[in-house]
Image (cartoon, rainbow, N blue to C red; front, side):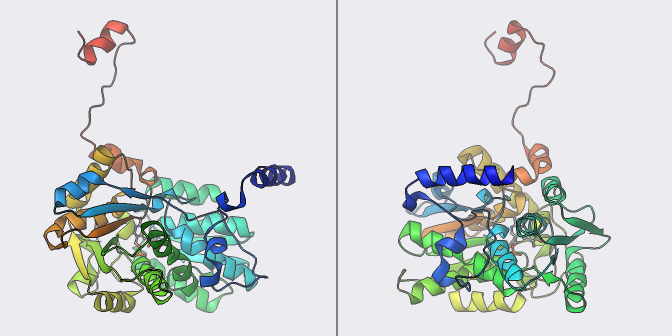
Amino acid sequence: MTTSLSAANDAINHRLPVAKRWNGLIDAYRPYLPVTDSTPIISLCEGNTPLIPVPSIAAEIGRGVQVYIKYDGLNPTGSFKDRGMTMAVTKAKEAGAEAIICASTGNTSAAAAAYACRGGMRAFVLIPDGYVALGKLAQALLYGAEILAIKGNFDRALEIVREMSDNYPITLVNSVNPYRLQGQKTAAFEVVDVLGEAPDWLCIPVGNAGNISAYWMGFNEYYAEKRCTKLPKMMGFQASGSAPLVSGERVKNPETLATAIRIGNPANWQKALDVQAASGGQFNAVTDQEIIAAYRKLGGNEGIFCEPASAASVAGLLKVKDQVPMGATVVCVLTGNGLKDPDSAIQHSENQFHQGVDPELAAVAKVMGFA
Ligand code: AN7
């Protein structure tokens, strides 16, 4: 069955022109990544996500500013984590690993589970009990991960998995694994490949600060290759109840409805400070209300459904909009798909939902205002 299915896929692929095939980001950006011809690539054809203009957000800023969304929620498991995971799991496979482990607020666990499954490895994931969006949990379960819900927050779970990987034969795939950032830097390549230049600003939600560090690495590598002539100001946004990079202090009990970034002790803290200094960027906090306002704007004005944590990038841009230079090009990263967290959408939608309508033409017409 598996053989005939992949044979069918091959047959379809062979009918496509070579240039139109997308075989994943390791294949696409091979010269920039630590792989050789004999590396066993573990891929779900991730990457190549769209850069979407958002005119209603740009109009709120005015002054000729252009705003684009890098919609990384369209990766195979619905978040940017797939970019890092294809690389981390590929390198784990190359090294002969039989199991991987991570702590996760949800998305990393889904990606780790999916890529481990592709690579024929076991995946162990530690999650904060009660604080993972339903869709992410469903994914990790279906992909076959072994899930341990910890009575503690993400930061504690990360401490435990770090020790586990130090003491047992199991590969850590959180963003302290350097291959994760190698994979994730390709998102910056894709932005430049589409715009033909680096943006002036990159706005991005920040939890462990792996992704902001990876983007910065990607822009710098392209700059060194003269594929762009400038580097963006890196604007990182945290939820106000979980904003250690803004306060400069570890947050013991981080809180936010954006559970993906409910992180009080970022694993890549020093890297984040370096990115801020080198790019002339900033870290700012956005409240849960500001996050939800941006989340609803993206859905209701632009037709783009992201998860709440992702909307922090747009909420943040709008918060500091007066600082955007005239005519600047801004890219906001939407890190995760809205379908991950349907509860948040239903809870925070104010749009009309007419329930219990009689199954009669007259009743339907009446609700619609025709009668
Ligand atoms: C949607 O899955 O940390 O600053 O364990 O899921 O690189 O940590 C998720 C993080 C932003 C923050 N947006 O990225 C995990 C996890 C979404 C996320 C972030 C996460 P980093």
